[in-house]
Length: 178
Image 1 (cartoon, rainbow, N blue to C red):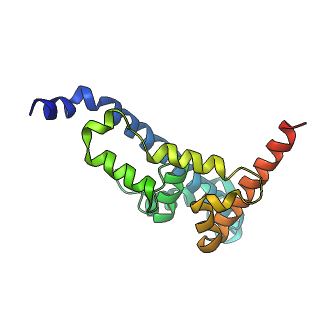
Image 2: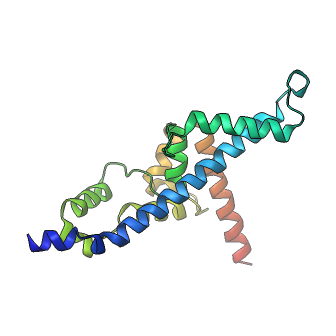
Image 3: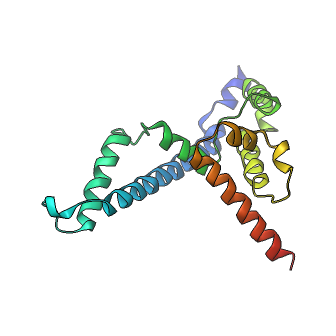
């Protein structure tokens, strides 16, 4: 009972709650950035001739507000699965696929005493995957299951992002080696 009270006290859980709040903040920022991007793209195709709006800036603002109303709840919760995926990707909170890392994460979550020594599994794993996707050496993708899944079953946008990461890694690699 004493350990439970200690492990669940407000002071002991403060760092975890602070990190969760920071993740939520950055997820909100990423989603709003994506919505602003969508509004800008839609405003470019907006026909002002048949609209009471005076300019594209007004159109962009109106489209952005409509997108916010459609995709965000009253308390700021993200309603769109695609936007939740964007937010998870930006904050390195993408769900773990089945395997050893997911089992380790679940084991760590199920054993609160272990959390003191192994507090995070998902974020470091996702950071390593992100870094590995930038390695321009052919064949490295064979060892990154997430990259294989994107190449086999990903959307064209996901494949383009993966190719862009490889290109960026190649540029950094060649620039750094000269």
